[in-house]
Length: 70
Ligand SMILES: [Zn+2]
Ligand SMILES: [Zn+2]
Image (tube, rainbow, N blue to C red; front, side, top):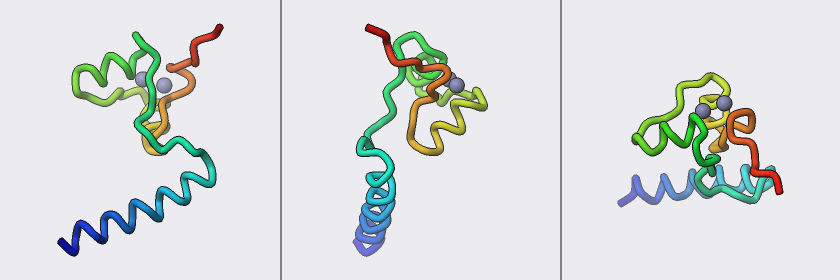
């Protein structure tokens, strides 16, 4: 169980770092029908360079997942 504890500690540290930048540490939300959304539904990750970069930060690519305008 020590490994699990270490993982939790690391995750907590990383979470704090992310929280300072952005409060939402949840799964990135993809715009329905976007390249990332389609890939996610297939259980894959979008291969677009811009999306891969965004995924590294646990974010959805803003270029391909534009927030729905009201
Ligand atoms: Zn994408
Ligand atoms: Zn993209």
